[in-house]
Image (tube, rainbow over all chains, first blue to last red):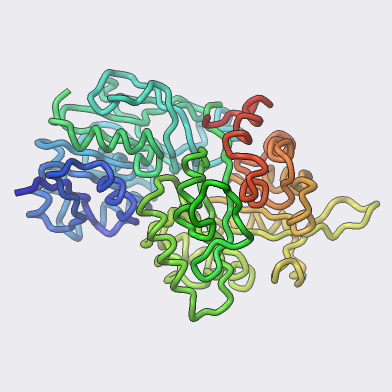
Amino acid sequence: MSSTVVVVDYGMGNLRSVSKALEHVVSANQRVIISSDADEIANAERVVFPGQGAARDCMKQLKALQLDAVVLQAASEKPFLGICMGMQVLMAHSEENQGIDCMNLYAGNVCAFADESLRSTMQGLKIPHMGWNRVLHKQPHPLWHAIPDNNRFYFVHSYYVTPEDKMLMAGTTDYGINFTSVIASKNVFATQFHPEKSAHDGLQLLKNFCRWNGQV
Amino acid sequence: MSLAKRIIPCLDVDNGRVVKGVQFVDIRDAGNPVDVARRYDEEGADEITFLDITASSDDRETIVHVVEEVANEVFIPLTVGGGIRTVDDVRRMLNAGADKVAINTAAVFNPEFVRQATDKVGSQCIVVAIDAKKVSMENEPLRWEIFTHGGRKATGLDAIAWAKKMVDYGAGEILLTSMDRDGTKIGFDLPLTRAISEAVSVPVIASGGVGTLEHLAAGVIDGLADAVLAASIFHFAEYSIQEAKQYMADRGIEMRL
């Protein structure tokens, strides 16, 4: 029986690019499926948790489809990759949409680049942060295999995570401020950038994920 | 600043085929969007934009398949524009694998459409394309207006005010084309590009008029563009994307090399 890489479908954005990119890099015995079925997610060998759109809608959809518990369960036990909103909603709280409680896997907030307190540092910088920016590795990790430090990945976002535990920071990026662009803890790896849109290095990261045993 | 400025080749697609002749000596089928997109990806394009110029609405479905096929194989951001009129059109393109959808004429006739679309799919997916033309006389302060129908029909809308309004309505990016410069190869309208870029908080893509690599650099340095879009100089292999990026980097611009 083949092992499955499940891309969690909770109605937030286009999952086609993620699944096609994964199909490019999986091993012969792995199968990529897009699923909103709790059992399929629970039985997956590894889980990719993408996301696009607003925090409020993401949380609403996760709850409406009753997927929040199974996603959190997956994040506690198997190789788990969060992408973009799929990273942000792992935090305790987001400042988006006048404040939204998120999944609370990690203590910390999701903050806005447009926040008044950043006005002087962000002056002249466009929001969303859109395009190819550098990611500095903050710790060695199996998912950085064959990816040179400080290479560029594709970002599109207006909010960024601020984990309380600085040990979670696996990568940082400069955009007016220095923000956490990658989180890693045990079996979880989560990126603010889109590996599925980041050409060669993005595919390498997905390939590394598909071969990862979930340990650091 | 470590965010790179972007180079975006633009491909016109008519009924599923790339037109305006792409000329690469070593490409199997210059009319095949997948082959051309793959080639641009290999050369280091930061994104690719497809402009659907299919005239008949009966054939509109073909662009969806084009996007699907390209998105299956090319893993950089894809933007699709041309004939996008409804939220359903937007969704279809995104589901096919586009990352961003450009709305042009439909925004002029129905600005609320931009608000509805960004509400449904998020600002980051919606690019508003603006076709502007200079309307001020020699001795007057510079002024540009929005034109439709390939620059033939005036709308009376001030370009700067319009760009600001579109951002207020949720546009995540502005694709700015100078109709005075489009096809001329004499360079971007830099005062226009700069005026729009300074007026809005979102990224601006400069388009229309590129004939040399210096034009691309000037779009960023003098026009303050976040990205530059060009068609013919890349299609006819006058310059490769790599050469363009190296040139811009040598001019001190942050690029993904």
